[in-house]
Image (cartoon, rainbow, N blue to C red):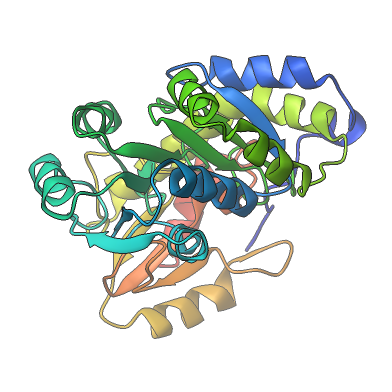
Length: 314
C-alpha cells in the first residue's frame, strides 16, 4: 500500500514570493497572544536566537527542558548560548504543573523550552504553564511546530519550523516570535541591536507567498491530523493519549523493530520513507513501541478508509 507523503499545497508551489507584513499578520492570527515575528531559515535557527535572547537577558542561568517529548535543539542551542540544562520530569512528555513550579523554584530556572504537543503526541496545559512561568520570572519558549493551527502561542517566545513534514509545510523555513515584554527588556538592557545583528546572519529568501498559502490552511491541516489520529486511537487498544489531541500516535509494542519491519513491507509513503518512527526516542516518547506518523501523510489527499486500511496491517 502506497500513501502520498505530505507536500506543500499547490497554491504554495505556484505563489512562492509574497508580502512579509501579510505573512506576519496571518501567523499572529494563529497565536494566543501577538508577537513580533521574525521569519527564519529553520526552526533550529529560531531556537538558536531564542536561546541567545534568554542568555543575554539572564546570563549563565539555568533552563528547563522536558525529559522526553521535546526537541534535541533545545539542549544543543541552550548549551551553545551558555545556559545550564536541567531536565524536567514529565508524565510521558506532558508537564505536571506542580512538579514544574517546584522545579523552577528549586533550581532558580529562568527559562523553559517546551513543545506545544509533547512529542507531537499529546497536548500540554499551555495556559497554566505560561501562568506559572510568569509568576516565577521564568521565560517560556514554546515550540509551536506541531500545533500551529490549534490552540498555541502562549509562550513569551514562540519558535516554529515550516520544514517538512510540519503543519505549515513549506519544506524550508521557520519563524521566531517574541512578546512585547521581551522586546522591552531587550531595549532596556540595550540588547536590541545585538539581536538585530544576530538575525542578519540568517538570510531568508522570499518564500513568503509559499508560507502564506501553507499558513492559511494550517487550521485545516491540524484538524485533519487530529481527526485521523483519533481514528487510530479509537481502533487500537495499545494507543497512548486517547483523551488528548496529537498529530501522530504512539502504539506500544515490546518488539518495535519487528513491527516496523513488517509494516514497512506492506505500507510506505510514495517518497519511499516509512510511516513509522521507532521508540524509545527522546523527540517522541521513551517507551518501547512505534509512532504512526499521521503528519507525514498528505492528509489533504487521503481518506478515512485509507487510515482503516493501514490499521489492518498492524
